[in-house]
Image (cartoon, rainbow over all chains, first blue to last red):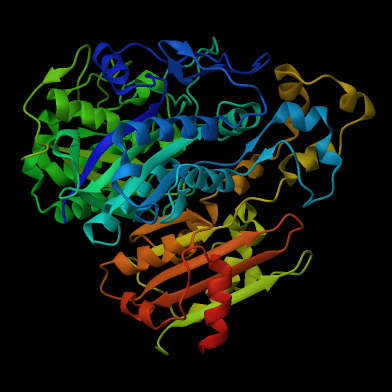
Length: 400
Length: 200
């Protein structure tokens, strides 16, 4: 059974509507800036890609769990746009969402001295993400099931891959899938900083430079993306954006934070996705990589592509969205599928923002300065995470 | 039906979890929460001397986080003056951040139990990681096209330090033989139930 994506609900640093996001990608506007939503006084670094509407950062009170807030808005937008609720029974709809760790309202926690409460007692400042997502499923009349995916940076791509498999195998009729995450709060931002993966300069300014020779880390972002996945036979033809054609997942089982430098299992995930799609590597027109901007990421992604595509790797255009908006962690795979949709709809590979100099250790064909126009039928999308989860998705232009 | 191997373990707060009897990568135990410890013991008993194939698919459901000692252990050492200070970004950086253990961040990452178990057993196959989802586990197993037994598991860490863990080594076709489960069921209740109804 063929599976298609028929709509998006978007709350992202690149905008909150599909047209706005496409324009942001086309122009390559920087969407990482000094954090506006909470007080970063004294922080060693202060940059992030916060959700923006019409260019302005969306601000919320400290007690609000932004990833839940933005998911609520994304779901509302998606369901209004696609009318899934009118086309399917509540029991036929599932919600599969990737997300991150729970939100703690640090100010409330410390101001109310909630740390004095005994373990297990309800803490007002602690927001349980899984519970909140299940409540949103109920709110929007999605009663076929609700699955929350938590494989860190691969969470939302696992959610989308899982949803695709459910539809392909006839186990579901329609799924709302995607991801929602926000680590732009005191506790989570500093927690990520302590993991040592953030880009850093002496000035404290941070810029994520995927694939660039001078890359030295990533920058956090946030956002919620909900997308409608349906069986092609049930989907309104004029709403079809792209087809999900293949999926593969593997685990490095190498280290807690570092990717396996042999790229064995990342390569294997690509092979599995291509096999599932029933296509050979020659049919892939461009690759949207994970591209975190960390020193260890690019050589591993390069090696995986080299092993799958051979010498063609030097002329296969690649892209990473993270240079423009940062790393959305639990929702990055879903957000970056918007980049894939852009490529398929506009027949362009976007330029990777902040990329300027090729790294000899990862000599990829990174599109720079402006989008590259080429015929695009199949796009490969990779994601990988702390913890070693790898995912590969093959997306296809409708009608090919 | 009897080919299914299932195990369920429960540890109360403060109860010793004999993790060192069951892990070979002992250096990594500093990253273990009690959920991971319980999982390591459960799998150690499930597999015994055997080792699963490296390409064994591994699907895992972790529990909703209840363990907020991440900050409690910091704040309990605050002086009276520090407790009275108004909260700000600078307060967080000066008073809280230096006292946070670097290991804490790893312990609150939800994918760490799956990651650490995969590292211990060298599991590199298909995988998915859920939060409190039996439906996700069962669908993943049902859709898996791997030609051999796969591993599904679930775990939870409670606020008081109690921990539960359940695993099953199963062939996708054997799912139909298991006691029926509603998609809304708690994954650990499922493992507990089938461990009671099947022989390990």
